[in-house]
Image 1 (cartoon, rainbow, N blue to C red):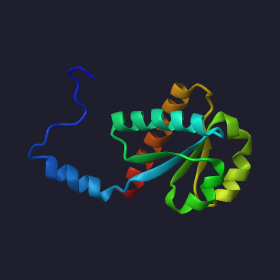
Image 2: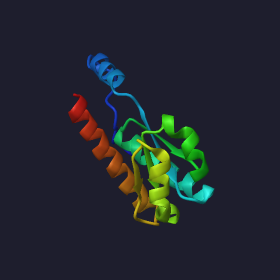
Image 3: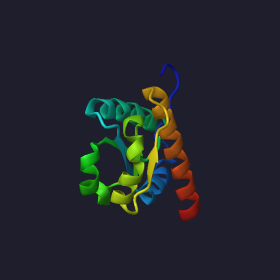
Length: 130
């Protein structure tokens, strides 16, 4: 934190930044770990990293049994280690929504992996829609 500021102070550029933000819709990623507490901790870590990097993603901790009802509002589902074996089942249940697995059990490493994936998805979509 200290002297580092991630976001520029409002200036003559603020209008362009606002216009650019309007063009980019916020996407939603669901973090599913099997155990509710685990999902919550991981989602919080991912949310913090997403905010630090200025990515336009909403991060939610969901239980596996909540996914189908929420499918229409999700852009990506990331499964934690505890439910990785259910990848094929979750993929078939989610239809068009991409589903990935976070390979690390350690929350901080898994959160970094998740944010790297969200960053690369954002860049790809930016290139294809820009």
